[in-house]
Image (tube, rainbow, N blue to C red; front, side, top):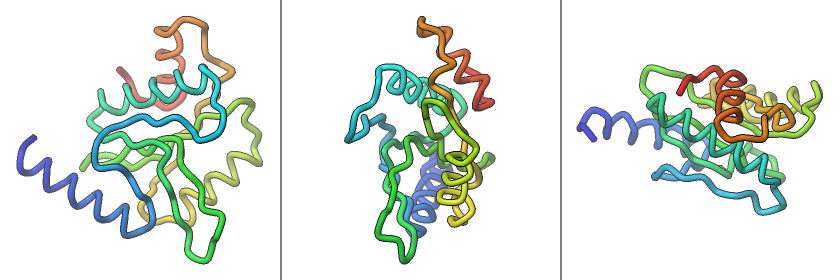
Length: 145
C-alpha cells in the first residue's frame, strides 16, 4: 500500500469512527448475530467482492451509533476509504418495502454526515448459481466486477 493510500485510509477511518461508524481496520465479512440465510451471506460476499474490485475497504456488521439513541444498529456492509468515491452502507434484505428503505436511509444516511448513500440489495432476486448472484448484486448496487 502506498503512503498516500495509507494516509487516505487513516483519514477516512478517523472520520468514520469519530462520527460513530465503527468500521474495522481490515477488510472483513462477518455474519449477523441473528440468523442469516445462505442467500444473505452470498449477497454480502458479492457486495464485498465488488467493493474490493472497485478500490473500497470493506467492513461488515458495523456498529453505527446515533447521538441520543440507545438502539444503535449494525450496517450489513460499509464500503469506505476510496478517496474519489462516496462512502456507502449496503443493506441486504428479503422483500424490501419503501418504509424499510426510508427508515434505513434516515438512520444511516440522513442522520450521519460521513455516509453518502445506502445501497439496497434485494436477496430474493438472486439466481441460484453464484456467478448469476454476483451479476445481480452488481446490477443492484452499480459496481462492476
